[in-house]
Amino acid sequence: MSDTQPTRRAFVRTVTAAGGGAALTAFLAACSSGTGGAAAETTAPFELPTSEVPVGGGVVLNEHSAVVTQPSAREFRAFVAICTHKQCPLSSVESLGAYCACHSSYFDIATGHPVAGPAQEALPELPVTVSGDTLRIG
Image 1 (cartoon, rainbow, N blue to C red):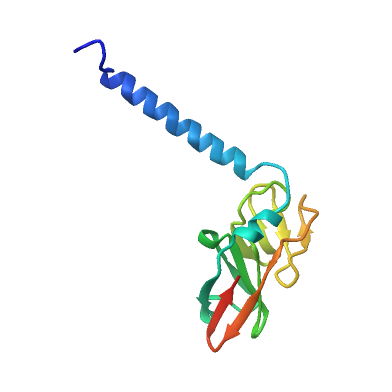
Image 2 (cartoon, rainbow, N blue to C red):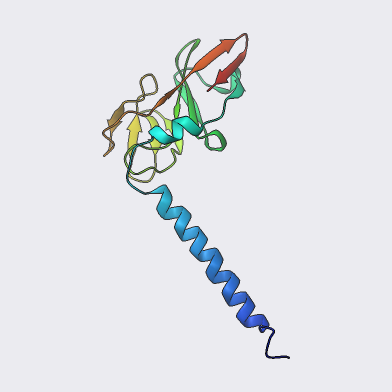
């Protein structure tokens, strides 16, 4: 093998190190300090069937950085799905509210205000328009 070409082992080691570094950077960025306000500006509008949002619950849509809830029948709310404590993505909607698994914060599904855990700030709200059986968020 020539001196100008890397060995297979050196190539694999370099690619693995670069991938691990990228994964670590993404993880640390997700858990950095700050509020979720910037995420509200970057959430692009999207549509969702009303049937996908359970009454008294909600759904986390990580691909849109949004959590959409239905606190009572035909009352829909949407919030940025990034925890205001350490910027981790919300993971689910449970009996206590919208849940962040990073540090166990819960947010009220009607207001976005924290109800348990270390988070102190409410989730930024997103506009919701209901048209028939379709929600337009953002």
